[in-house]
Amino acid sequence: MYIVPSGYQNGVVVFEFDLFLEPKAEAWIDFRETPTRKTGALGPEITLSGKGRAFNRQGEELARFGVEDWLGVRFETPLDGRGPTALTLSPRGAAPIRLDLEHQTADFRRLGWVGVTGAANETAAFFLDNLKLRIEK
Image 1 (cartoon, rainbow, N blue to C red):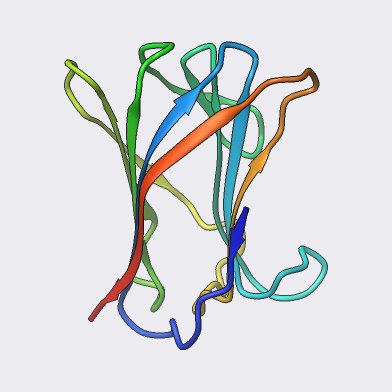
Image 2 (cartoon, rainbow, N blue to C red; image 1 turned 180 degrees about the horizontal axis):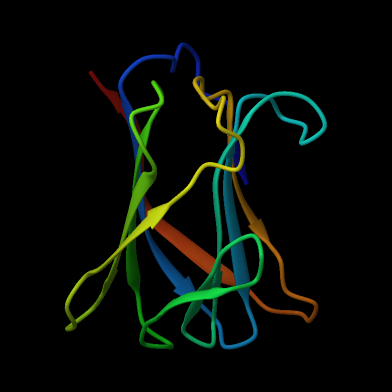
């Protein structure tokens, strides 16, 4: 699934949703200036695994969370170079996990594409609910 927002150039993009991952599922979420990775600046990127782990682009484990339950996911992404994206993972019944995600390129200033993609090598599913995308000035 991908979203192509219009006019997201100033302020902070807030992208939030609830996610349920089957045990073999992986959801890859990334923000881009353009739909292709070959052109344009790249924002934050993370992979969330049905095994209850979060990984950055380099494959480094950033956090662990509960499995086989809904997980609240919230990105707060500044578009004016004011710093990294604040990611909050909110497992049901547990304390929220807050992470700072660096943008993949320093010149990321405009949001033109957000993708939530299946990244598993096996047949699996994940589910999204309560999806919200907005810009806060």
